Image (cartoon, rainbow, N blue to C red; front, top):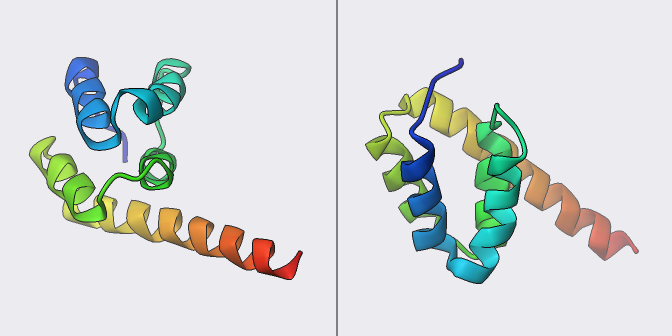
Length: 90
């Protein structure tokens, strides 16, 4: 599902949840593309230390559908788990 989100609001969310230093890396991703994949955004925000519940709350404020958020979180968390599993194998 595609939807438009105010870039300024998205930037504010990222900086608020990730902080200015960590948030800069996430914003580089956001600014580099005309389309942002929600699971990728969530993945990057979690890796930067953003609280998962806070991410959920902010995405709901942007009026993103709960099922879209759930699918995106599942993808992000699976990717994080796969990365951790690969690190243990090395």
